[in-house]
Length: 237
Image (cartoon, rainbow, N blue to C red):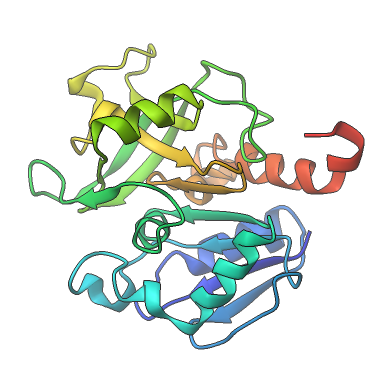
């Protein structure tokens, strides 16, 4: 599985993602600078990491969306390559219209940096095949603009098409306002596109992928991707 980690000015989780892909999973990985371009067949997985691209000026992800590397990301998306946007990467995917909706400031206008519980709502994606539907996992968040919003029609479409992948909940799996760290509509923490090859999520799986970090709930997300890419002809998923 050949992986690309896109580096924008202000990215700060690119090293973490690269480490998990290359050192933890042992897969070939490359940094791709935001001014560089690549072919749609050059990589099996493209990661848009967390951080504060371009200082979050205008809106989080609004300027990064116009980086030259994003032209290559768009073409890779059309070719069906797997793409994951984590935190700021999710914001960039929204700005690029690769995923529906928008991201607003956290409802309390505060930066949140702590662990949250998530319910896995869709275990049939390339990113979640090693989780179980309804499983509760714990991942860290670190964002000031993680309040996902979309209009009623879009939300209903996401739900009807099983495209809500992760939902904020408490440790017992209860979805409530108290378990919502940022005010996201319907407690949405992660969604996927119609074709199923692009995932955007606010929590950080790369920060919970090694025992030394005290949590490996995020590791299975990357292992799911690897399993999908290595075995898609065998498993047909």
